[in-house]
Length: 362
Image 1 (tube, rainbow, N blue to C red):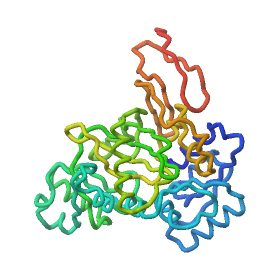
Image 2 (image 1 turned 180 degrees about the horizontal axis):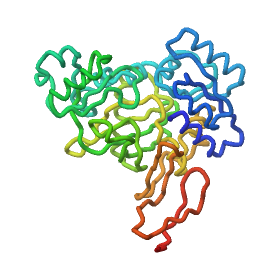
Image 3 (image 1 turned 90 degrees about the horizontal axis):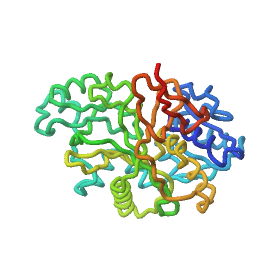
């Protein structure tokens, strides 16, 4: 979904007429092969397979690729320490090694107030011991394997019995990360860097989730509804976390990260993870006129002066709407019409959807 969000963003960008977009994918989900967002899509081996790197090299040579935007986190980690066969803007390798593991990330940021309290618990402890000795309920439980997405193994456990049942249902996870549950609002903050300097800040809030009733916590990995927002707290905390990691690694930040945050009981945001890539809301920013994918491509090509302002002010009533079978929509001024009131579409073009509430009554 994230790669396709980037392709959509580039298709509506000011650079679109000069772009030929070539995708690569392991093709576990074939939908993107036939959607028509890319000029061509190549099936490639998984990044852990020996033939992966040469396959990417061959494709870049065959297609004469000018710039790459690497999306899967394990591939970002792989290429951050190697020479990609085209120009790319990637975070530095030591930072990637920390951020890709939630355990390593939390250890680096422990006792800073930037992340919640946490511990790591083996499945044997969960099944056979007194889990209350190491966890104060409710807790957020999840797998912390590298490159995990869509909330793999995640559960809001209210009791030790729920945690134990979850471990039984997820026998492939041999260790769980257990962290303080943050009950407040759920955010993400994109930060795009060029040569150590933040050049784009874009935040959004997650409001509702696909298939929420099918997961025990009510929080699945993908939103059905959200909103773009301006909240300086989120960017300040996110940049502080990146700075602390770089202080330890001695590196300079480049490329994009998307930091997930959630509010604690007192309303203060705390970091829950750092993604080494765009997230699916990238297209919603582009629809609003703040094209992160375009900016990412421009800094990759060395055209930093062309990327525009650091931030954009979003309408307070804006809304991201996503559906299983349709492209995401961004509504600048959203409200549900009253009974008998009609929404009349004005514009069927991609991006921000124009509509008006005409007050028509049956």
